[in-house]
Length: 149
Image: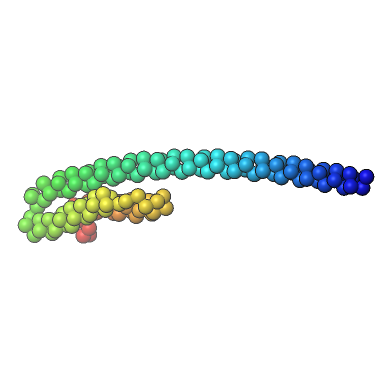
């Protein structure tokens, strides 16, 4: 009888242990599936963010190209007006025009050479580029202004 109770107890413990282990396995497999779903969703969100980043970058480049073209047009218009200036002033204006043309060309090259390095680097680049474009625009506007009082 003692052997029967002992055997029954051992079998009951084995069955209970097997049941607990099998419950734990289904839970961990569910956890793995949940984790895989989360990873897939995170990858999808990352892809969407990268697409938005690339679209923004393309749009910004297009806008920058338009500004650079507008700068070139302003410079050309100023060149046409310089021909009517006195000889002494003309040389100074032509030097300033050459500097502006070089800066504008450098800005275009800088934009064309920029490679996608990440969102933070893009934001830093945009801030610096906007600042430089604003300075360029102001320099073009100020070129014909005589600051002598």
